[in-house]
Structures are given as C-alpha cells and as structure tokens.
Amino acid sequence: MSTNVTYAPAGPSGLRRFLDALRQNHAMEHATIHVISQRHPHLQLMGRTTPGGFYLYGETPTTLVASAASEALARLQAGESSLAIHPRCGTNLAVGALVAGAATMLALGRRRRSRWEQAPDILLAITLGLFLAQPLAYSVQERVTTSADVSDVRIAGVTQEWFAGQAAHYIALERD
Image (tube, rainbow, N blue to C red; front, side, top):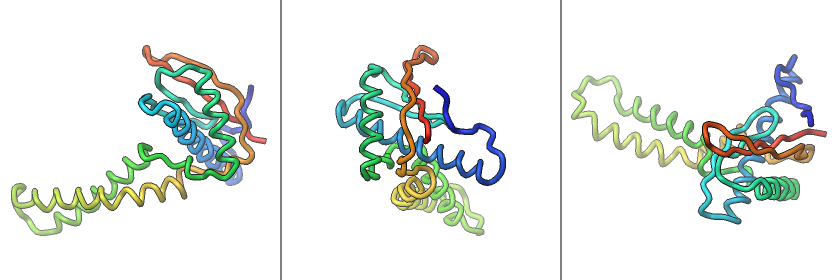
C-alpha cells in the first residue's frame, strides 16, 4: 500500500501537492475523531497528521477506527465540511499563544513599571487575547491547516501500532 504523497517534493507544484495532502490528512484526522467521539463521547483520543495519513492515539479497537475513518471520508466527500474543524486542535493552542503573546507585548508598552504594576494589564491582555483567538483559530484551521475537499482521497489501510506502551492507529491515505 503505497501513497502518492511525495516526502521531498520538487518544485512549486510538488510543494503544493505536499501541502494539500497534509491539509486533507489533517481534515480526515479531525473528522475521524469527530465520528469516534459521536459514537463514544467519553473516549480520549489524540491525533497527529503525517504526509501519508494520520495517527490516532488512544485505546480503541481497530475496527472502530477503520469504520470511523470510512464514515468520516464519506461525510466529508458528501459536503459535511464542519467535520474538518476541531475545537481541541493544536492550531487553536498555537493561535491562542500568538494572540495572547502579542496582546501582552502591547499591554506592556514602552513605559517602565514594576512587575506588580504590570500584572493586571498582563492578565487582562492574556484573557482578551485568548478570548479573541478562538474564532481566529477556527478560521486558521478552515483556511490554512485543513482542507475539507477530500474528493481525491481514499483510505489505503488502518494498522495498530504501539509507542511507549500507548496504543496508536495509523490511517494511511492515498490520492487518485
């Protein structure tokens, strides 16, 4: 089961295909986690996207992961693009940190004050930054880090692996 994703793309079109594949794989990761969470709301999962597919970490039967990935693909292909966005995505953390950091730097300004005098401004800036970051992070997921257009994607295989005693499933994806 090979994949059509190039790990060392040559030229702009190769880089574009590589990035598009990553974005599609990220969308499939989110969609699969959504489907599993709908079936088993208390199950704890974590995902990680790779150029050839994605990993799901957590104690789940392989049959559940395989059927959820198939359903996720079908639902994305049917136009259910909201499955590509996930509230616990690492993109949200990164955007939140960037916005909160920028807001904090603005709050500090150029005036020299003691740390105690700056503390209320810093806390307010962080809180405001994190509040504003959530809708921005969803937009970044939708426009930058995921692509719900998986019309050319198919599942090549689902395998279970173990990392440091932790169960993981690798979902390999191919493109037409």
